[in-house]
Length: 270
Length: 317
Figure 1 (cartoon, chains in turn cyan, blue):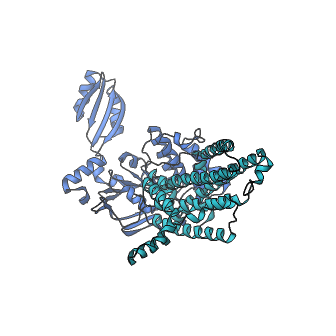
Figure 2 (cartoon, chains in turn brown, green):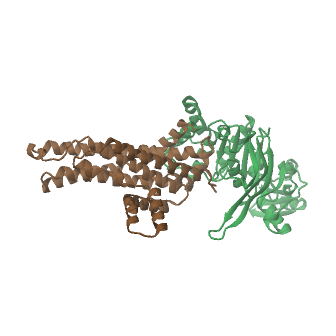
Figure 3 (tube, rainbow over the protein chains, first blue to last red):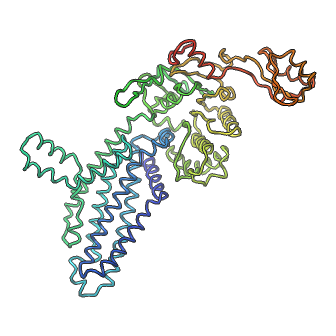
């Protein structure tokens, strides 16, 4: 496996994202955020900075989710549907390298997306700080340009990487519609995964308890990636927790990519 | 060492959604292609040509049997540095230009930036896309995509080139370009393995052919030696023919059919020789517009085989 070939595929995915105007969502993000800040600033006193932070992080997560799912499910499928995969795999490129390159290309796209969204949020926050009177600033639970926001962005990014890996995994064997539906489904379940564990206290049947426990460990747990509540209210997020969450994402992503590459490597391209 | 070698290469697909039933797309194909030859894989649609190419490039996996390219098993990724492949009806990336596509593939092939910079413009000129090289591929016509497909198959100056229906979608000028390109590759010692369902494509370029029908090898060898495709007669179009001259021509012809005023189609027996025909017709006062051999098409050949032996899958010579 060579980094050069994987890199060439990744750059191609990134270039396609740019030319498919994927980054237009950033414009919408900026408009939503700036518009909201003006509106919220007129309606609330002291709460506006928290609302904007919340909104910025939620919008980053949501916009990123759409990019991750809709591009993620098409990464492999488009190659097969348009038959471009035939010429591509006649080159000295392993199928695993193709899957990894596709994934890294979208990871790069998402990195740029999240980074620009973070920059836009900081700009809006800087403007709010600049235009707010001193007494109002003193009432804020966390500073406007709080570096802890970066932790929230980092975890959102890793959540998006995990969602991308789920989308890519499904797309190695199913249609984009089905892959998107399954990925969105897992995204929703992933945010309520912890509830599966709580069912144990309500359900008496042992097999059902084991099944729920199995699902709890098998399905992705996305709730830990959401630290917006803590960050917005100025509560510290422990470094160990961040590392653990990133570690969990990395292991899950590695498993999904390995499984996706395994399936893709054995497919007949009729 | 053969450039291409297959041994009992077989591929079964499962058809149907609920109740899967096996379908044999290729049945025990054993074939050798020598280095430097232009080899045509012929057969009607559904004969197993594309399946053979996909097996050789490991786009599909064999059910049984084996295949080698340049002495290496088809699964060997390294051997793909030395081969080129044009798929049937190729399609690439809408967002890339022809130059960017070739550069991308050149990188995957491990070509240096100097090699890529030198080869890409030259290749695009060679396939007649010099002026359109900076256009995004989504604006390309089918014929232009075929040309860029040829260019990407040759970017690494391969030792073996696989071309799946290379003339498909091309106008007569494009077809001639492909023929010349194939012959140019042959002159440089490149092995060319191409599939076609059009006999004249093979006649114009191949040193040897294999004919597939229903997934089976029906015949192989030099095209001229395959009796099924022997010349059955000649069709000559002549013009400037007066009534008297027409009567004279009718005497030696199998048939004479008027097309327009002074213009006729003359059918001659297989024993006729084109050079003699030209001379005789000229001396009789007619000018020859065209002279073409009449022979079975591949379709005629296979229809006959099916009629003789039942279903096409059972066809054998």
